[in-house]
Length: 88
Image (cartoon, rainbow, N blue to C red; front, side):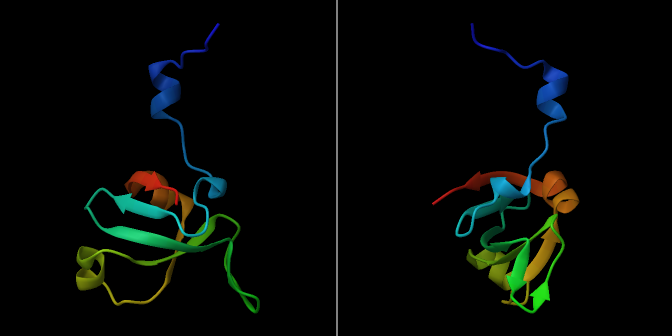
């Protein structure tokens, strides 16, 4: 028998770091698309929090509205703003 989630479980479901593998594309609610560079760590000597990922602009909208460099974002921000994740 297949388990069907309740509406409350579906609404309260949140992303985890594992949902953002390296190379995947994240589409935000404002239609910006960013590529995941690293999850949990950017460089060996420059660690970010275990609840953060490093992303860089991917589509023209993201590049035009932001400096074209990597940024670190945390799960709170991702859970509030991600529309979809496309794993490559």
